[in-house]
Image 1 (cartoon, rainbow over the protein chains, first blue to last red):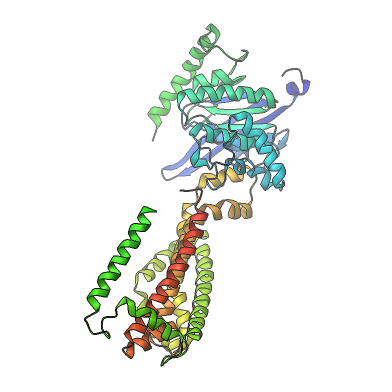
Image 2 (image 1 turned 45 degrees about the horizontal axis):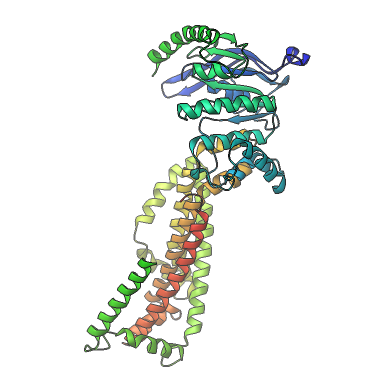
Length: 267
Length: 248
């Protein structure tokens, strides 16, 4: 990972003093304020924080779905002006599969938008679905799939775009604990194979520690980056090892305060 | 299958009871089912009635014209009001209120405007068929899941792709339901128009037979219309089931 000298020099994603406010009925809310962050090439960075801390807003900015009111988002050194499906793919907490499309056609959606032909789309989709344990489910509609399967199809749909950057907004948040752990292990495998730069949003300490190279702890409203932690541990990680226990305690210290603030300040 | 067999048995039973009850009564007021096939044949073989095929053909053309206009106008207005939030807020309640008024009250004015010919029937079929189509477009647009649009935008979809690949399929089930209801109402509009005042068409024929106490012929025509409408609606139902295959 550090073998490529460019990865040390150029950040793949750079946020420069970005800010975002939303107008609500009870007045403007500052969701994100003065956030600066660099994500290295092929890094797995997690944004960790309590609900409503602007994690998703920040991720939306990187994905080009949310325009910052202040500051700039740079992808590979170039200012981002909107969704860029050649470079950035997104996965959301709600898989958002198109219910009228089979698993196969859902995975092919992004390529269809790019004008890729049917045979090629099929080939790509089958190649992605099979190693995800979805062989035999290609022709199923989303309602016929379990929650974990749906999210895997959604991830396959994002991977089909073959972008260097993958953004994941609490992708396993709606799944049960066991499925969640398995999906985490599985994501580590995907990451090893595809070498993508991944920005992952979660409020789970456990998930952040199991998956990330680096964890950015965010403050609650307005969202800022409070602290950054490196996690220099090999995969698969033993979540009961002394290093992990120690890191979890440190993270918890940081996040406890913010969660309390978020609870008190919750409207 | 068992349900179908039972349903057929119930129908046959009802016909049997009807036959037995009608047999000793005045055939002008009470038509026995057994008299209907013969009467239908008489209607076909140009008897005292004007020839049937021409009337059927005219009515079909009126329905086709009325429905085509209802669908065009309904889709157009539905999308204009559905996609323009402000316009929608202004006009949708008005539309719903107009729909609630029993449409037959408009018919006399349509006859004044369009006369006794096919135009007034087409106008009435259009009026009746238009509302379900327009309202289903409005309901369908509201049903489109915003999150699916976000997902599509994140993958680079522009307005055209969002409309064709997200909004339209997402609302297709509701839309097809509205198109089906609109078709049924367009048929009703044209037939009622013909019965209330015309010089040609199936409705006119029904009125004519009824007016001359040709009750068996009248009943035969009703059965004929019923069968045609059932077949039409059955075909529409199959189409609807196909469109919603992913949902059930």
